[in-house]
Length: 452
Image 1 (tube, rainbow, N blue to C red):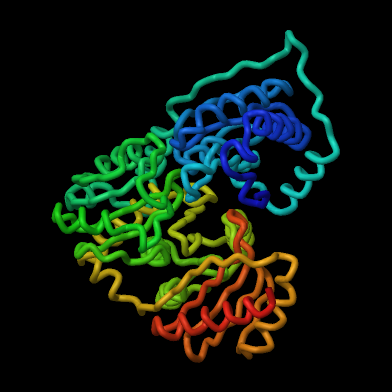
Image 2 (tube, rainbow, N blue to C red):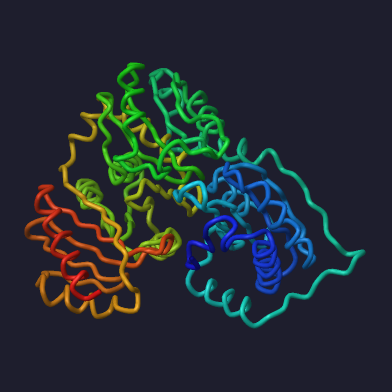
């Protein structure tokens, strides 16, 4: 899979060390041409293939004369923040994010500390197909420097944010249950929560890459965290994905609140202090619109993909944004999804409201959102979009990213698009009632089936 999300696939076929080294060499040479001399920062999540691919990435970069700063195992947002605050020409994150353990990937980072946008990504793909990078001479192979302080710097930056009242959080001493699914989040999330005065109960804390379940932090995958919340008497449950850029919530009863509510509650924390535009993607719940409306600010939408949201945020001077998959972006820190940041804002929201997690969620309208993945030939998608648009007769049609059909009068929408991270087509629908959302999904799936 090649997209603005990077290059990803299954380990061994097609991802091999040889392929990874070649991609890293091409990226290093390309970014040097784009931005001049400077190092490339590298980091990885906890996957068992991570150390192997880290060595391949480093070798590839050195082979084209690019110095390497090795951050080791760190959250993806830690890598991006390190690049942003340095003279690096770019960065490479070795992580397949929410994909299963047999997958890995390279997430490619520009010198801005954001992922390659569509324009830069297209130029890199052209370079990759047409250029043979010039290799460094034997006596000009650059160094590798280890930097174990990237996460401590990241933590310090979060604690210094004006959106957080750290003394009030510490005084509140919130009991938190957490599931890090054996990803890179175990050690760092404990650091964060203890710095905020929380007591912590955890599962999946060992960062060994042996995911005990589907690592995507969707409601369907959080039963064990819900049980931990109930058994431990925690006030809230937090779940992160393997590279720690997405956060999902479980309330004090053990009920999963859904990933979309993460952005909604985090945005409320920010807007309470700094009103301004909010940006999210076309697949995010209407509850974020409700929050923006409550604070009298505009809600703007971008195509799915973190960098697409980040670019729209930059253009609109947004104060907060993100995606409905549990990704929160705060420009006051950096322009990327950040689960430790999101957790801090959620805990601050609980302190601000002085209520339980379930009561904080209940303040906002509750929608049913249904997400389905289907196999469908991508070359038939345009025909499918035309058929869906004609059959469903929407009030609002948006073709910026696949097809989004909306019926604002009845509070419903449907988004159909090809995934950038998996070889599937995603169907996402939302309505006031689960039955209505399922009906939209079923109608769309039936139409797709007739075309395929």
